[in-house]
Every structure is written in structure tokens, then in C-alpha cells.
Image 1 (tube, rainbow, N blue to C red):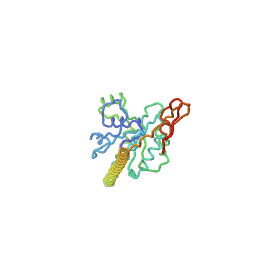
Image 2: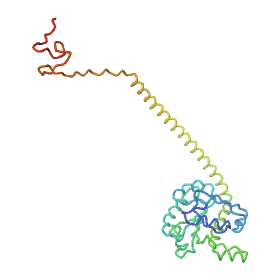
Image 3: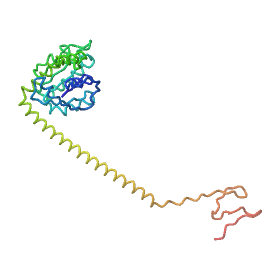
Length: 285
């Protein structure tokens, strides 16, 4: 698997190994699977190998997918931009997370200190110190300075001589990686097969659990919606069947001839002004 921070030169390195003409590259989004030609394996002393490369994006949001491929990997290429000093601390943190991954334990990791052609690039020794590899007592991690992009002059020399002019650092690092895989091949082959199977079984189990959780959540949501709908319908029906109370009569006070307020319709009270000189007399019992 080819990994490293975004912009380190992973895809350019792979393009060079495949033997394609140099073209402007864009950041790898997610995953790219590339098979290296047989001539490449032979060039690095591994003619018996068919080399399959997982080129994985290096952006912060995409790095989590790396851990879906470590079980299938026999070795790791970690590419560092030697000229981007501002990213070395981040590269160190990411690299050490990989080194600690149990599924990469004892698998070879080749660190390519790339872009040595740039004037402000740090040497491989400086990059090793910045990444904390100078203190790492392990024979499974290798670092070398390199320039992944072939120059126009080197390609011209290659055409004229008929010999490959691939960068020395690239040759050394990739040869070391394949040699380590060859030396541990029987154990690695058995281990990768076993860990790949275990990882897929675990992923399948997690997938089933996610599906079941999704079904349960959907069921609970539908039940809650049905309950709320029933409550709403019951409340609506209750309002519809309720008899509205008759409005209270409003009694408007009226004026009598002497200007007093009287309530019309009250027992013994006038319904209209009395005739001149007369008065209303209550009805006999």
C-alpha cells in the first residue's frame, strides 16, 4: 500500500514505477488499484511476484480508509515531502500510528524521503530524525532520499542508452521492500490470508449489526409516529363531538322617563316608558 500525506508524491512515484509519461497528477481521492508490469518486478529482483498496489489518498478526511487495507498488505510505501517542513510533525504522527497497527506488525515499511531535487529539501538523515526513525530500533523500517519524478534529461538518457535511469533512491527503497517481502514470504502469505479473512468476517458482522440497528431505529420511529398520529386523531374527534355552549344573553340597560337605568323584562319593571302622569303598577299576584 502506498500512503503518506496529501501532496507527498505517492501517485507520481507510482506513475514513474509503472513507466508512464510524466503527467500532472491530482490528489488521490479514496483508493486507486494499480498492477505494476512484470518488467518492474524483474527490475527490482522480484520476477516471481505480481505486484498489486493500493494507492490511498492522504487527505485528513480520507486516511481512515487506510486501515481497511492493512490486513491485505504485504508491505508499505510511506512517501514524505522532504521540502514541506511544515508537515513533518503531522507525517511523524501518521507514520507512527501505522507502525503501531497490529496488522502491520513485522511487515516492512519503506519510507521514501521524496522531492530531493528541490533546493530546500531536507536530507534523508534529517527526515529520519524529524520522523523519529533514528530512535526506532527496528529492521522493518527503511528510509532513503529520492526523487520520484524523472527529469527530461534522465528520460532522454534512458532512450539513448536503452537502460533505465530511475532514481537511485527509488531503486534502493523499492528493492529493499521487495527483498524483505521475499525473505518473509511463507509466513507473510499465511498471515495475510488469515488476517484478511478475519477482517472481512468482522466487517460483515459489523455490517449486519448496523443493518439491524437501522431496522430497529426505523421500527421505533414508525411506532412513535403512529402513536402521535393516533393521539392527534383522538384529540381532533373529541373537539368535533363537543357541543358548544349557548352564548349568555346580553342585557342592555335602558333609560326610563326619569332617566333611571332599568333592565327590560324584569318582573314589575316597565318594558317602555310609562305614559305621561301615570306609573306602572305591578300586576296583582
